[in-house]
Image (cartoon, rainbow over all chains, first blue to last red; front, top):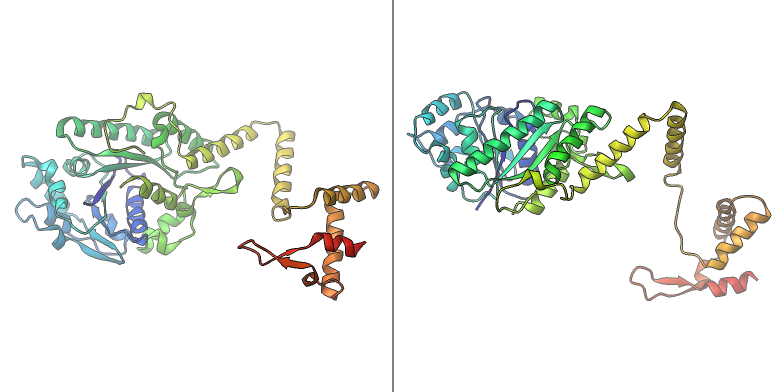
Length: 262
Length: 132
């Protein structure tokens, strides 16, 4: 059985796709066979991996075609990492799904037949639509990236309300793995204050923060993952804390996930 | 993170431990914030202290020594009105020069070691006797 992790936050620009791609490639580099599924019609996962966007998600979930997952995954060109791409056809897919009964279960059912992947990462769109709900229904775990600003923290609250709603109405197993603070800037008081605010609200669910790092933007523009573009960048390895030890960063987050999500 | 059972009661998390990385970064941030609020003079003193600590990095070593040796170094430092670190540095400089010049050969003082990490011990009693 695969461990399915949804990366979601209703607010845009909080680092969902960067998180999804980096976690997926990080897990793949640790020898875990991983699939990343792009649920956003913008098809950004393919961009971040240096690929063209594609209609595989629409083919996978189309109620008429319903192609098996094995036919809809393509190699990312990286060892252990496959991808289900998305593009504009996902917009039509959402319309097609909206008329169906049990539409929220479409993704869970499709991924049920995805043998051979240890981890499946779902990169959600920044909106509450049928695919967003379907991701929460299909996932075992939810990671909520949030920029350290007042609006984004509220976005996490809204997301947890959605999750509670999904639990109540659809009896799913998805649990919060953690809230992931992104764009952490240890120099600014605002970033620090919002991190403290997040901790006050979510305590142990707050994952090690991801430092703000321009390398993340450069990497996506170059069509490379952070591991390929800047393997020693702050967003991966963290920043010095008291005592000079590096804390935070995606490497530490992946370590935490591997400790717990099995 | 949580075990995969039940709902999360967010109102009841106050006593829960934080992720160690989050705790470390918050405490560093709080320290920085507290420093920012200090008067300019104290802020400067703190920055100087930090720079000094930074400069000391790599300049400290911890060795296990006979307490009598430590006391002897202190005694010489006291007599010459200097620091124990500097006296120890002089002793090491002179000893290393002697080793380089072949005046001292540590192989004469080696005895087999039981430790899996080191092959030999130095017979310090013999060193003392020879020095006298």
